[in-house]
Image (cartoon, rainbow, N blue to C red):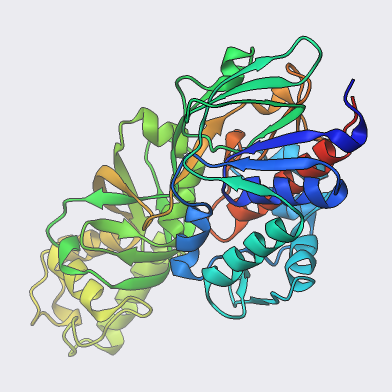
Length: 412
């Protein structure tokens, strides 16, 4: 019989959710032995590269229901957990450990140092102070239930370890040989989320670095539609609007093999009729000006130049001289440029998946399996993913803290 004070707890995965689980468990039960198993050579790899090396810790949205709407998968299940440990608690957690956060104009929150190393140091320090033992280059190969309770673990090093409770925080990208599946869990097949679009259009390739503050993107034949900033790149399109569309459409776009038409409304604040009226107004009031000389705000000059050329209009053409077919084509391009997407790239080095353990198989009060008592889940192990902006880290802190609290207070 294992008593409360002699618990041996194992967290699989040395990322954000794994560290938060281990620290919460060790702090809630100082007598427990807590281990982190990380199959890679170093821990917190995603934390290091996130936010361009600044670490987008969370988002300044403090209403759980509103916050939950930023998760294409997991919105309903997260409302309760976010009420217990949301962005306010995250800010307080780091602040109390000497790491204040700041809020940027778009709501993203970063350490005031603008360095992910600050977050890594904080987590490593908290783990060290609470007695968490970290084993790198040590993965979990198999996990079996012991007769008297708890688990027997076979590690990638060839070693064997017995423990009372396990938090699987090992990410959602392992589809074959998942230890939880061997114990009866199912798995929603993982597919990428948060990716940029490859587009082979020659004129678009002329615009790397050009950004537009607000466009509307849609995928014809689907209900997918997003609005926000857009960035042209050497390979196609990126920016918050593309990343959000890829998150909400992760499964659908995977099903299309990442080959699909993309429609861009460059002027989402105006209707087609309003655009037609503006062109007519320019013909009447600026008729002697060349089209290129009177750029259409807020479109960047280089983009405007390419749209005009694509409408079959020469650079010297004056507004008053526009032919009706040219006007119609310019309107079509301004409110509905259609391009073909031919593949994807991950957003910088960040890798987010949707998929993992189905949410119906987990009790979100404790993050414990409904199928395997003593097994808990956190972070990307679950079929939860957020749009870009600090939401994926918040899901990691939230589910990690709840899982850690639960295993730390467990008794057998």
